[in-house]
Length: 133
Image (tube, rainbow, N blue to C red):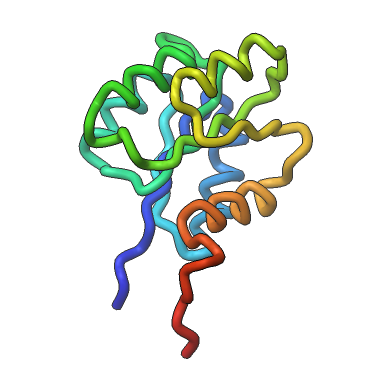
């Protein structure tokens, strides 16, 4: 049995977090969710995700500050961190990329299935051959 890829979803809206969790789990990922930046950072330390979906507007610690904290930790320096938010102000987008975001996805423009496809693109790049059964 192959190891499942791990996805950590930072999302303070419990219903949205559940939607992403269900979608990603049904596509074969192991998923943990966190309702704020502080809880999520602690989960990242123990869960060791392969990719992170990070909301910007969260209680306790916002996504930009969480992103910078994650990127400052050698454990998370090279894993994809996809900002997943409804906030599209140019200054926020620039700050996210300057802080080390891999991609910036607008929730209102993307279904959970489309977000899952984006996760697959980063975890299984097209130039890597996935063996067929």
